[in-house]
Each structure stands twice: as structure tokens, then as C-alpha cells.
Image (cartoon, rainbow, N blue to C red; front, side, top):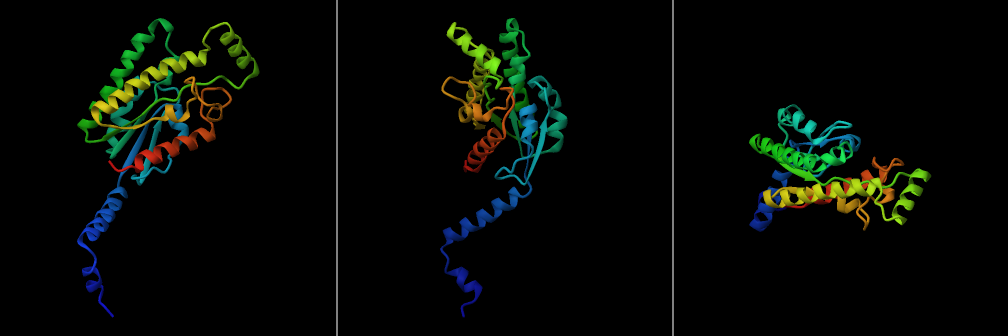
Length: 230
């Protein structure tokens, strides 16, 4: 019977190198941590299994805005020394802003994202961005009726207006990811309808929070993108 060494000797060198690289990649992944930073959407996602990471730490805080995420960044991200951080969430910036200040708030939001990227890179942490999820109409009958009447009168509903502002910041994130060569999880495109609002099956009854089906879809999007070799 041939010895193990003799059998290995018959394997092409390219195959041996590929096997060793795969084993090394798996060993490195066993030590890798990713932090999810965001607001209530992120918080309710929990700690999904994400390819390439042995440990997922959730640092979502209900009601938070990007200013709060930036303030928490040193303690909730940098101090943990993770391999990567997934930054997700600016819907509260929109919903809590007076219409007269929206332009100012969106400009500040863009600055918050850029500063978090700067701090992460200084600490040697990979940044992964996620686009925000648009809103949909509440499941309440009266809210849907009001939305229908508004559309018939040529007026955009609150959910449509929120979604429009959310999508504008999402476009900024796509540009930032392309410019800085960052991974991007495009949650908006995965969960939105043709009109830019969220598909009903992915929304809780209030039209804002995410349904169980929505979180399954988010995990599928994240898994496909993170499993891709760069």
C-alpha cells in the first residue's frame, strides 16, 4: 500500500496549494469578529451567521441616529478590535428631522459615515456598508385609505416621502463604497418595490419595522455578498 507521503506526492502542486490556502482561510475565519452597528433594525437582526466570521457582535441601539453611532464608535467598535464593522442605518435621521432641516441633516449624515470610515481605517478595521431599507404604508386600514386618497389627489404619502430621502442617502453610500472600494450590502434593492417603498411582506404592521421574512431576506443578501471572494 502506498504511503500517505507518496500519495500526496502524486497530487499536482496547484491542487496542494489550493487545499492549503483553503485550510488557512478557514483557520483565519475562525478568529474573525464582525460588529453590526446601527439602530433598531440592526438591533432586531440579532447575531446572524455570516460567512467568513466566527463571531458576530450586535451593537444596534433602538432609536439611534448616525450621530449616535459615530459617538459610540470608539467604544462599540474600535475597542473590540474586530476584523470588520457593518455600518447600517440612517432612517431615524430622516424620520426625526423637521422638513426645513432635511438638507442640513443629510449633509451631516454623509459626514458621519465618512468619519466612521476614517476611524475604522485608522484602527485597521474593514468597513462594510449597508443601504437603508425604505418604508411602506402601515398595515392599518385607515392609514392605507389615507395613502390611497393622497395618491389619487397627487400627494405623496409619508412613507413615500421618507423612502425618497432614504434612497438619496443610499445613493451616497453606493458612491462612497465604489470610491473607497468597500463591500456594500444593498438591502434597499433587495427589499424594495418598483415605486421605491418596501415590499409589504418585508414590513411589520407599523410599516417601519422589519418582518421575520424581511430579516431572512437580509441574511440571504448578506450571506451571498460576504461569501463572494474579492
